Length: 226
Ligand SMILES: O=C(O)CCC(=O)C(=O)O
Ligand SMILES: [Fe+2]
Image (cartoon, rainbow, N blue to C red):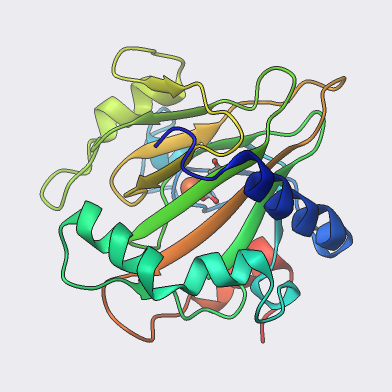
């Protein structure tokens, strides 16, 4: 949704990121689209499970945002979650209850990339609040897998550089998107070394109440658990 967040509000969200940027947990690793980093001998070499690509971005964790700051208000406001639920055609949307992964900002500093992956939350809402000078593009292959078909061949092709089926969004500050990252392979392409950092606010939601992330994933992305 283009320009859903007004320019002055996008600036406010970005300022809240800048104020908390020192709490970002950056990690650099090679991982497969399922966030695994260990070789699995049960799969051949060119299989998505054994294809490891660089992720070098960072997250500002959920406990960096105090209740009542603009980012937190936007994440939790009943009017807004109602609006998202209507767009998704589901009865109700719950804030992802994970204290670190529920409300985050995704930071790509110069040189960084968030490679192809699937999310574990049901729905994510992102607002780009500071764009890179070039690169840092959100790219996705909609519904590349479903409950009956892991789509390994299609995924392997995208990981090898195939562009067919891949959509690229030309996001601008204030654009908001809702996506089902569990089924749609997606990435944020590399931000060049001489660019401004790319900042995106990320709101995670679930259909069930009280959902939290697994310990191993939490350690991997946030460097700690609560
Ligand atoms: O920064 C974005 O636009 C998307 C981030 C993302 O894919 C994620 O946090 O899982
Ligand atoms: Fe994602």
